[in-house]
Length: 89
Image (cartoon, rainbow, N blue to C red):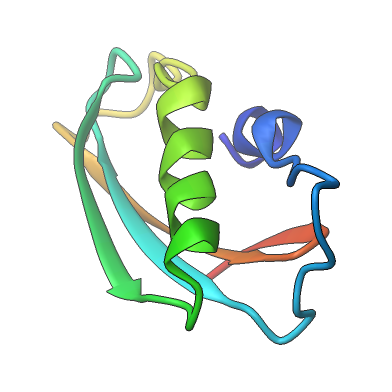
């Protein structure tokens, strides 16, 4: 999942992005990879940046399917988006 989202996390070069920007998002993911919910836990100070975060999640969807041995009906995954990098919570 992390690798899938990271493939799409590319900010446009149209301006310099403040390196202190940070957006925290929690995704609820179903076994087939469908993103059933997206909750922004922390917005950055830049609404345009936050829009790119949401666009990244949209472009990366659906996420990879759960392994067959996973029996959960859904999982929650926290992601921290920073300019030039992506972290997990």
